[in-house]
Image 1 (cartoon, rainbow, N blue to C red):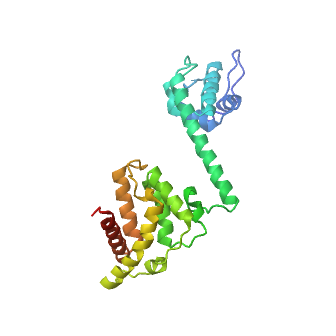
Image 2 (image 1 turned 135 degrees about the horizontal axis):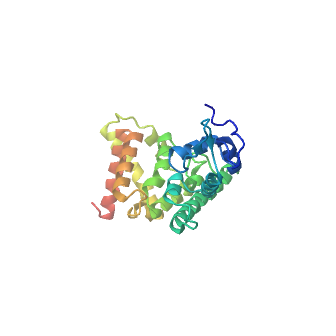
Image 3 (image 1 turned 90 degrees about the vertical axis):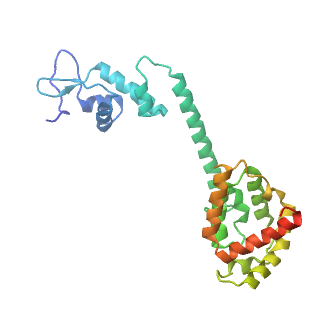
Length: 256
């Protein structure tokens, strides 16, 4: 039976589902959904089976639409009643969510402006925009996407400053092309050549070895994530070279 058919005229004005939806500025689908989840009471039916909505249904629909337009979820609305004209707690929570959304959108617009101006690439985080024109291996570029999620503020800033420094690494090509089956001598020789460059980086950017206690995902999880990323992005010979160079620098500092 078509419940959207215009009801018969009577002494009391009532509306069909389509009519009440149009009056409330919403859709048939929304009205039916509100019935399904209990937000809107089912109306009485005429003898012919057609629904007949009254003013109370229209007012309830208008209240629901007002709250939806403000940004309240249907779950939040279901917890309110019609007498709750000023749901302060829910409103404050929603206001905080909207403020966070606005901040995120403003940040996105700032980053898009940099991209449109050609000052930043689409793939690198904004913090590393200065490195856009520097030669980077695919592994290095992938790692830069992970770093903002695993580094605390001081270490992240140090990495950004290091990338902006644009100091050429004389061993970069050797490291990038080092095969996984490189022999002991080749690994040690490359590690020894990397130490002076790494030493200079740490001296210029001491924040590279700052505590990582404020990592966005927590220090332990950050360490696990970074370790996994390194293992998947670099081959075993490259990882061994980094470990050797790191141990040599630690020995110089008296850390090991």
